[in-house]
Length: 359
Image 1: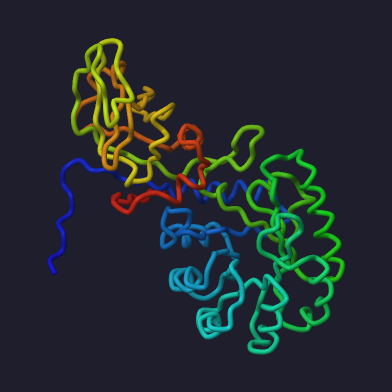
Image 2: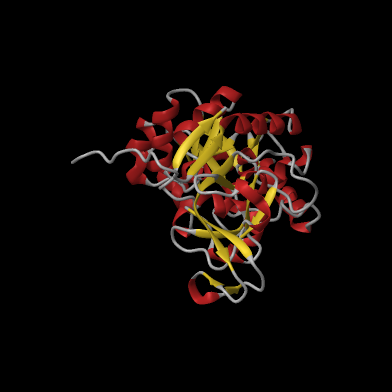
């Protein structure tokens, strides 16, 4: 099979700023100075490439990594080598014992059945205990976790953890209720390290930080909280080339379905990026790219490979071969225009990008 040649003409690129990720990690460490700052790198480091993001975080000082599945954990261990802890959220399953041992992974135990299987088939295996304190997702019921405490502490228990449901709303009463329930469980686990907070939970302060925090979106520059300013720097941007610039006249429709009709003379640029690359069709209402400091609103529907932008005010800078930028510092704005959150925008980034790592 022949190797496809590299594209030499203008083509879309995903720019990943590893320096920003390291800086965000340092910022989190300053926010939680008495805590070990871990890193959630599931879903290929939120779509940015765990093979490059993982080592950058180790360089920044990270020693606790969290992934969704055993397979993700094994792939990450191949990248990181020996040393850092890798915790698998999705649980302990007996068919995975050889993989868990062979790649030095730490499974979460999420229910009494998984704990019984661990006791019976892999009592030597390091594990974490995941307790549900009010989210009703994965995790043992608190009373079940208390019931097995003596047995769990007799094994190689590395971490007791739970997960906040509403940490992005600092005043939500469930935050304090979950913390109280978590403290009730921890009383049965003296001396065992504890972890409650994701990115947003870390911002709630020392009472929520415990021994290990587990930031995800903050590392990549998304806004963890619905309140206040975002203290983190976006680490991802799409640079998409303009393929064509055309004149749009009053009455002209743009794109599928003719959902946009111009009422005046405009300039439109067609750029090489569409929903196959991770843009959302919903961003036709309020979405935009940047060219320098110029906002370029989306015109009409975003299609699979192409997006049309209004470049009327961009002058001669908008020309074939020039690059416009999606996301970057406008990550949250694009997510909002897409009717989603920055998490989903990042993990849906397409595979066609040339990936460029900086910093």
